[in-house]
Image 1 (cartoon, rainbow, N blue to C red):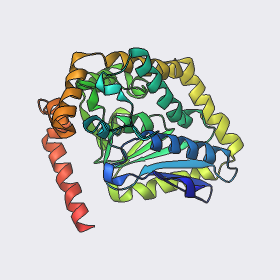
Image 2: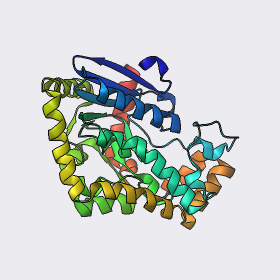
Image 3: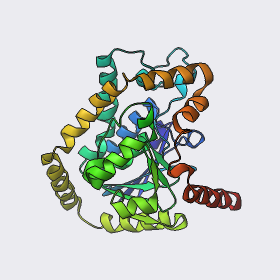
Length: 304
């Protein structure tokens, strides 16, 4: 199965399937191809009687830093399936934009719709599109120094997936969506955004132990119990909310700030656009706590 993938790694043993986002040079930014391959791997695991549980993780320094925005600064002729939609450029009709967003959402919703549970193993960055994946998972285990948030709300749109309110309630959800601030894994655990935050060097062992425990349970029991919780969320509007979130993102792309971001990305490059977006905010990614976490991460990377 894994031989056909270019942007993910797929392996299985002991009742567990491990799906690894494998674009470490891009901090596992979500290209259209990666999203399609991820959906295919998830359905493969769901269809495999030997698999009881899936672990979703990222290679390199991050779980996932968001959607692949590199085409914004290099609008070359499109290669089929390789280019992220022009959603943030203001260059498409509203309905076309929404259609593209909904198409990508169908790939993500495999996490929700599949019968077997999915554990997100989050380290490094889990930003923007990374949260669209992780927060759909059944259980999220995070490194306590990871960085979680959706900074694109400042100048690029609205999350095209929305589990925020269901996980942390309206006030924390509004905090994330009205500021674009990020929090550490430790804070995410305290507010219920993730199930558990743990030291980075213990993260993999913790996830493997949880997955092994789940893998000992009959899949015929795992499926109805996962789906019972998801159905309860659906009765609270969660699935309808996902569909609406994609449409809402399309509407948000009409904002002048989004057009300005796209203009800067096109003319000055993506780095300049991101600096314009985030430079005026003294949020958690520019706090003493964040700098301390970054220094710790960099020191650990040098040791490794």
